[in-house]
Length: 100
Image (cartoon, rainbow, N blue to C red):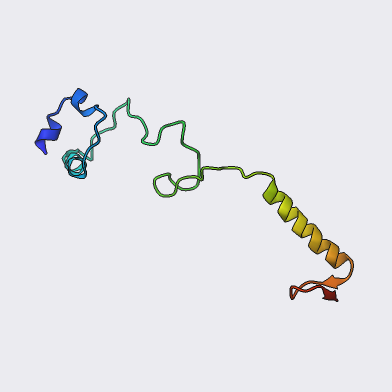
């Protein structure tokens, strides 16, 4: 564990991926009470973050935040159809149109 703590900052900032063992050793060697570095960057990037009810590490926000116009058109069409059927005094409760 001391070997990771003694590495210089430039050696740690290389783009080589770390193994699980190396990450585990770094996590165990870290001080949990140490303050965050003022230059620290969020792990998901500030531009990618979208506000939501749950944190991103638990359940990320959906990739598409606004669907197209077709779902709304389908819902409006169904509601209008049901209202039209009821306006003519017909019943569609059982799935088949019948006289009410």
